[in-house]
Length: 254
Ligand SMILES: [Zn+2]
Image (cartoon, rainbow, N blue to C red):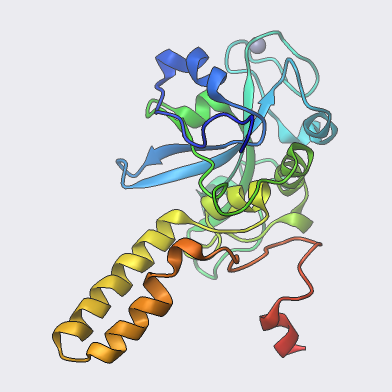
């Protein structure tokens, strides 16, 4: 993007917090490792309390129950002056944590018998980073132009504050990356799931090839693997009122 900073920053640990802030622009996607670095958790950078964006301010309601980690002041009611920055995130929480959460912040639905529930949250950047560090990575921007900042923040904040705009967490079809890319680029996609799926497909094709099914392997490579660079169309437009009417899957159903 002309005039934009790099799509991806290096990783910053909490001792370089101030340097990390210099890399960030409103609506950026921030990642931090979890599960020992095996997976990455993603969220949308929503700016600071001090210079709060009007869209974020509009949704900053007492039920969000956000307190400053430095002084314990309620950040919705006032700006305590500490350097507090926000990240909107979709995650999973344990079912027994639901009761402890503020009513309305946790989607009521969840798989029957599952011990996890979908959770939308506006959290503090320092808490998001934990002790594992974080980096900025607008991973869809090369394929799909980001939405205007107002729209990115609107999508993030309305999901955090209004159940109507939430989709349940699903590791494969709607995970934290999907939520972040849906807010930023308007397409719900996950590079981690895509990479795993492509690796599996690649292995399967190699087996086909080795077993003598060369024509089948050839066509699968052409269709599914070699075209992945040019693939721009999203798999799903989730939880939005502006679903494209030209979605062929939907047209067939109706
Ligand atoms: Zn404070």
